[in-house]
Image (cartoon, rainbow, N blue to C red; front, side):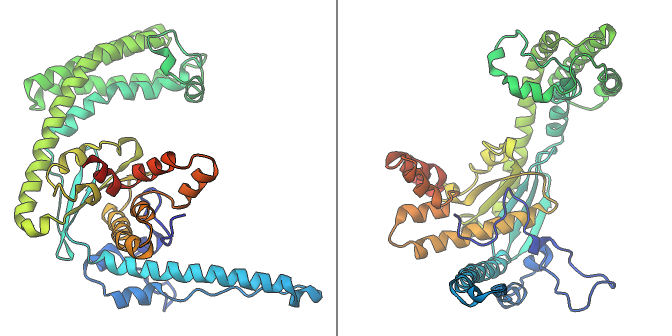
Length: 409
C-alpha cells in the first residue's frame, strides 16, 4: 500500500493535469479548468492549487432500505465505513493539492524523453522551462535505423513461422508458449510474401541512396552489408515461397557484426551529444544549483534498465545525490507530454522523501521503503508468507535507492 494519493502508474499523466488548457465556447460556464504544464511552470500559487483540487469529497449517505434493520447495526456499519473512506479521500485531496503546488517549484530539473533521435532533453530552472533540444548528432538515429532492419523482417514473418521450437543453437532459450503466441498464423499461410516484397522495395531504395548520406566510411560499409544480407534473405524466401527459421538465423548471424559497428557509432554520438549539453547547462545554471539537480528519464519498460541516457547523465551529476536524484521512469507508452508526466512523478517523490522521515520517525526501514518504489504492505505480506527476516530486508533494500547507495558505501 502506497499511501500517496492517486498515483501515476507506469508514467501515465494524472487526469487532473492533462485536461485541456481552456474550455471552448460550447462548454458549460463555470466548469473549472485543470492546471496544465504552462500553468504549473508559470508559477501557480499553492492557494490556487488548493482551490482547484481541495474541494472536500462528499461522503455517501448510507442507502435507505426497508425494514427495521435500516436504523440498526447494518446502517451504522455502512455509515462508519463511509466515514473511514472519507478520511482517506481527504488525504488524497490534500496530497494532490500539495503535489500541484510543488510541481511549479521543482528546480533544477532535466527531463529526458527517449526517442529515435537519441532523446529530447528539457531543462527546467527558476520555475520555467529554459530549453528543450535534441542534442545527439543525427548519426545516432541513422545507425540505429539500419540496425533495426532484421527486426523489421522478423516482425513480418513471425506470425507465419511454425509454432514448434526449431532445432537451432540455444533453442532452449525460446519459450514454446511465447513462440506459439507469436506464430499465430502458422506456416500454411503465405500472407507474408506481399509485405516482405514491399519491405524489400524500401530496403532497395535505401541501399541505392546510402552512399549519398554522408556517413563515416566504416558506418556506410556496415549499413550496406546489413542491407545486402537482408535483401538476400528476402529474395531467397520469396523465391522459394517458404520460411526457414534456420536461414533467418543465418542471415541475422551474418548481420550481427554490422549491427555491432553501428552500435559503436551510435554510442559515440550519444555520449558526445549528451555530455556536451550537460556541460553547457551546468555552466548556465551554476555549480550551486547543479549539485541539487534532479533528472527524470522516461522510457518504455523494455529500455528502462541501464537506459542509454541515464548511463551518461549519472556521470555528470552530483555523485553524492545521483542515487536519489536520477529517476528512471518506465512508461507503458510514449506520453503526450513527457515534461508534465516527469514533474508529476517527481513531485510525488520529493514530497514523499520528506514525508517518509516525519510520518515514520520510529522506523527508518519503513521510511526508506516509503522513499523508494516498494509497496509498504509488501513487507508484511512477505512476513506472513514465511519469508521474514533477511528476505524481507533484502526486498526493502532492493526497492529503495537510499539503501542501495548505503550498501555500496
